[in-house]
Length: 386
Image (cartoon, rainbow, N blue to C red; front, side, top):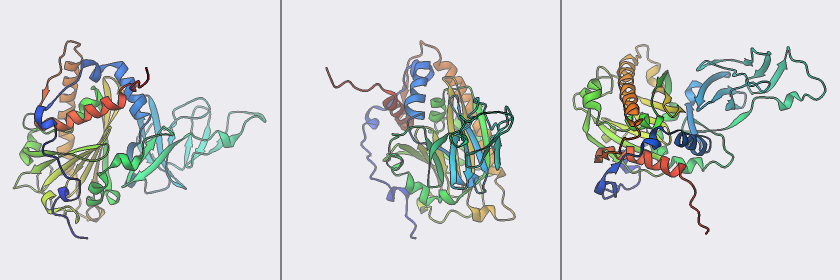
């Protein structure tokens, strides 16, 4: 397949005269970032209603491979069963015991150690040793509760709603980035979770702008140019930006250098770029020519969240005897802790009810886009009667 000259050739026309460039944007209220009412709206109207990207297929290559995640106060188990990857509510149907605590692993049976109910990798109840029922108990009706699950471009999606917005329409132009960077074929070589004492939206802001690189990220600033960057205007429930790698480097890592081959479909003009693309509400991709990052931020409370970070590489590279991702991981692991400090201090500042929203620059368009999208999704319906 012919390589495009730029990602701009593969997506819709970019409007250089869009309204944001006339006025910039502004932050939102103290309550929008730190309020309990807003937090509950987000859980109810976004996280319990929309399709949510939750994992990557490369983590489920074997039958029984599983992962767990927490969304608000709920826990989800994703497991590769006999019919493919399927998500379930991660609690026993008997008394609600949380079944699996580990972040990832492999199991053929899921055992509730409270009363020894045992489920297979397809969510079916196999046995309930230690619990005694009479004729009224139907084992077939007491399996794990499934969660709607779909896969697109190698990404596992779930929804808790029967009437979630159309997934393909929400993804819009994301598929062009996924195709060029061969997302479905990549291999996750490392994953790490980070607790953050901050509202989740502040983390989403932070990972979608590079203005703070010179002061917060000396290593990133040495390799990437925060001034040679821009924002995409994308179709779908996605936002994005791009940033250039400095001339003497070819990879975003501690060394700035890599002998990994660029992925073959990456356009020439993007070989020295990071394409930052976010599937709203909470999954950021860092698409680079030699690897891809996936970084989720999951809300827990108005003031706490956790970040899950994946590092993915092309299987032709991971198969090499000299493959190493340590320089990549070292850079981003250090940058992550630097970011969480920024987010936590920002949250403490925004927690002051007297805080007044500030002006956003032209380089913070994605921050404004994220807030505007969340505000639309959580707004009360307009009353057209009366």
